[in-house]
Image 1: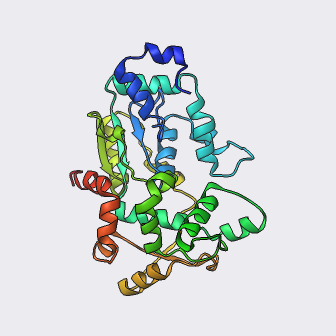
Image 2: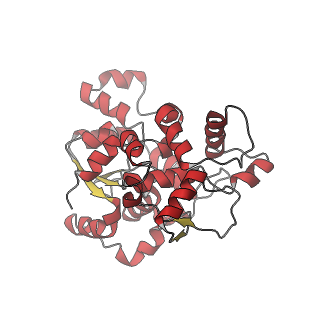
Length: 291
C-alpha cells in the first residue's frame, strides 16, 4: 500500500490523486535515476525495465533473483523487491508532484494489438492445462473462448483475430488484464511527461543518457532484450489476413514463426476501423509524438 488511512488524510488533493493514479502500472523510480519511467505491457516493458535497472545499479541483483512463482524473474523482482523498497510509492508521488521528468515509451498501437492477441495464443497453454496448471493468461484465454463459443470448450479451439477484437471492444476493458488494455492512462497527461516512440528506443536512450549525464549503456544493451519474443517471418499480405481471420493455431510446432503484422497492413485491412475505435486514445497520443 502507498499510505495508511491516517496518512491519506494528510495528503493534499493533488498528491491524493496521484497516489490513486500510480496504482495502475506503477511507474519505475529510483534515487540513482534522475527521471521516472512510465511503462505498459506489450510495449517493451521488459527491455525498458532492464535498462532502468542497469542505471539504478540493480540489474545484476535482479537477474540473480530466484522465486518459486511463475513468471519472468525480472518482473517478479520488479514487484517483489524494487517496488517494495521503503517509501517507494510515497517517494514516487512526491517526485511526480515536484515535477521530476517522466519518460514514456509508447509502442505503435497496431503492432501492439497483434502482440496482445498473440499473448492469448501461447502454445504452452496446452501442456500447462494438461498438467493442471493455471496462469492469468490461460484463465483469460478460457474467458475469451467462452465469450466466442457460448460455453466451455477445449483450450485449443481457435480464437481468430476478429474474434479477439470483437471481445476486446465489447468486454475487454472490464475483463482484460493490462496486456490487452490501452497504454494510455491519466498519468500520460501530466505536463512533465516526455513521450517517445518505442520503435526509436535505441536512439532515444542514447540521447537521454547524454542529456542527463548518465553512463552509456550501449555496450550492454544486448543484455536488455526480452527472452520471450517470437520469431517473425515474411508472408504475403493476403496470406496474413487469411491467417488472422482463421486464427493463429495454438497447437503449432515449437519452432514455428508468426508473421510480421504492422500498422500499414492493419490500417488497410478489414480490422482497421475497429482497431482505431478500440485504441483511439493510444493512436492519437502516438501520432502526436514528433518524428
